[in-house]
Image 1 (cartoon, rainbow, N blue to C red):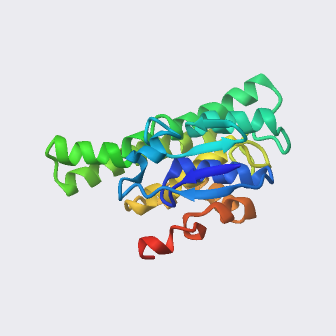
Image 2: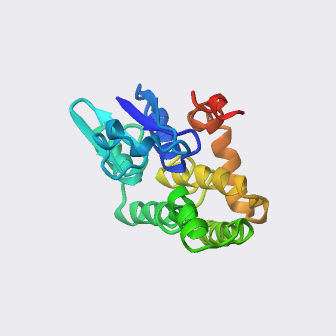
Length: 216
């Protein structure tokens, strides 16, 4: 498999974690979002939306990280990222979507560019926007994790699920904009458990081939 990725993309981060958890080999093809490589014809031929990630599996190209996670779960079910029981699966998906659908989209580069450039907001106002929505999303997850008996070492029980695959990237992404996740103690505890899990750690932005090229 080939994963088109950018080191700082939270969506690509999710897919890297899932591939690692399932022990699936993949080659990373870097797409520099800052340089606009996602809009070049050679990439839009792969993903017309001009975003990452895209996952090429044989002759099939998949896009949108959550759809890719579901595809990997269905085609490579072990180890599972979703529980067996319908209600438990719904809980994991719900936690995942708070992060991947309600929080992360409000801080992606194209939204930041639109808010700053096209709507005329200052960088300070943009930072306030990002922090506001990051905190709202993480607080919602904290409220669920802290109050629901299904929470274990990880978001759901004692093995990683799709919810953890979404949580760790969001915590790191929010941290890049100055959000202190220690204000969410249950989120922080689960985040620490993820960081101590090799499949998550290997997917971290600092281990990606384009990290150093970005000046780090």
